[in-house]
Length: 354
Image 1: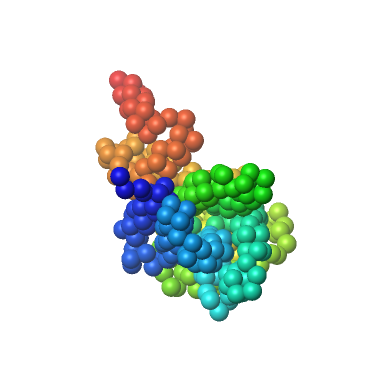
Image 2: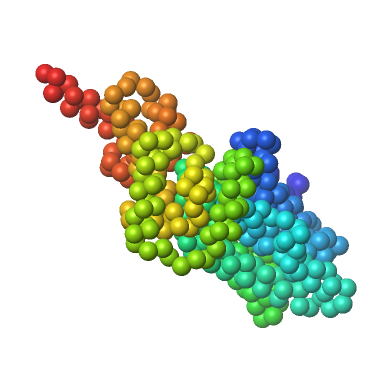
């Protein structure tokens, strides 16, 4: 019977995710290419793990270790691209993130012993860096579509904990080799790495980058430069910004834009994304995504009560892109499902007419 290592199965799953990401992306995935590259790297690494620990091919150890040092920085850069500050991954600007891989190459030439420690530190450091990057919550992902920003934020958290968990599992493997004669090392490495890569792949595949035009991307870059880490605006400034956002929603119906994100909203106001986010948080006591979704749910309620359009059509008319997000937000705001809400209000209208 042919032996198929678990990492090979994980690689197949990751390739499936990759194909789905490409199919659902415009321009062959140009706008989320960082995540496409990321999932492809995860799939390749899973194959290498299967070859090393499933078939005992020690010749690929250098490639396995070097690619392992690439995974954390690539992961961090991919999620950082959702910040909406115009900092798309660039070799000219982000070359310092290649230092762990360059150090691994030098270690294979000179002394191999510190490589395991290097990989552990690499995964742990970038896991912590991702948690720090996510400290602003969903509003920190200004380039992520508001309809899917919560899912992207959860994916960021899952990825950060997976990187840290991988570092901790490597420490456990080290203890097993030192005090347990390495009897469980192959199982720990093969199974643990496969699990981590699968979690990372799932997280990368569910992110929601926005489909931005070149003009929008340039505008968001200017916002990032203007915004920086400035001090919080005064309460009066918060009220003025929140009022301006309210006006955009009520007069321009901006919430109907399926591709709306925080960066695009800030660009309309010629303000830094962080200032808009802070104003909404402080004045309305909620995130930007919840604020916009409240408008979308109000529009959905109007359509449900005044038209006979099917719910599947109303989802898009109200500004949602996925049924799952629509149902979740509708339940959050009204406490009912869309169908139950429509049925209840139809009965109320019939009673009034009678």
